[in-house]
Image (tube, rainbow, N blue to C red; front, side, top):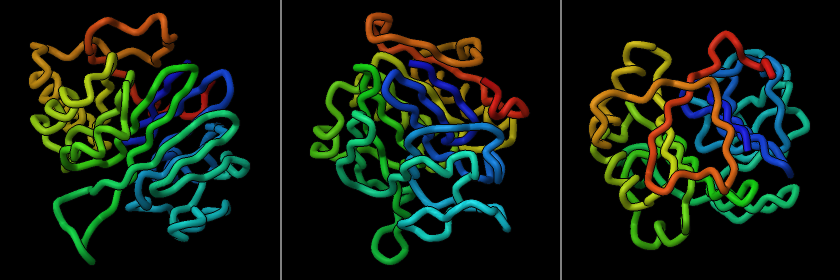
Length: 230
């Protein structure tokens, strides 16, 4: 399994059976996607700043988030539910992007998928802890992609990781500002007991047999100007 980070909550995971692009918003990857391809697209929430005049289709559920043209043929998943696409089982779980409820609520979907036998949790722009029932829907998490520097505080993010108990945790800075992103990763790593963040790596390639015994924080570089390069 190969994991590439594109910035904010945008991640691509390439497995043997299928490739998933999580949150490939045009505000991150551009209107054409700059070569990013996938069989499955998951959207944890609507794009907050969608680009105007994008030629591709719109997300079918929210009707306003444009899909990059390089992902025209991908199956788009939005919202809670159980899905199976190209032999990949995916569960969407409702959560929230802040503490508002009712009409003011900003919904988020956490996606749980099994890829090459590895259980991956993409938290999107999740902003709070999980209930006991929600934790039960995320059994045996191996890799958790956690937002940092957004509504979810470093302390709350670390507590959530303790609850989920993954083998690998990958922080996703929810900002494009490099200084703020670095500070968010540093604050999270401090909560995880690390004096300094681990050296960032270009991508993560992992197999189920290569998973560490204990929870390990891995920092993956955002692709930045290298979007779409394989």
